[in-house]
Length: 117
Image (cartoon, rainbow, N blue to C red):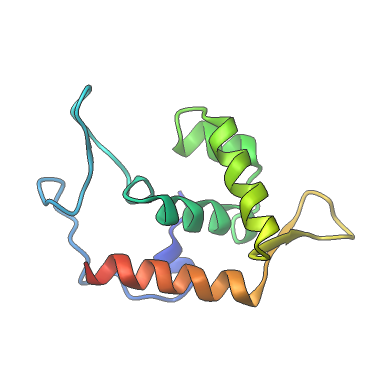
């Protein structure tokens, strides 16, 4: 699984890892503790950005592995991040995504903010 904390060099050793903590989100219908990338929309964006650019995963893989096959949601985030200049497709390899400096900086800010909450 992609982890924006690790991929962008943010120390996660002091993060709360207890699923009973209020820092985790729980699906009330199924009572399943959700992954950190589901805590906020921006954490979702950060997670998708890292999976595309660092792990080289396809949007289909990300949707299947991390978002209950919600391909539409992953595609919307990819289109949005492309439009605001956080990521772009490599012109030499259409399967490879690259994070811009702007995108990398926003991921760091998002993750740092989430860490401090």
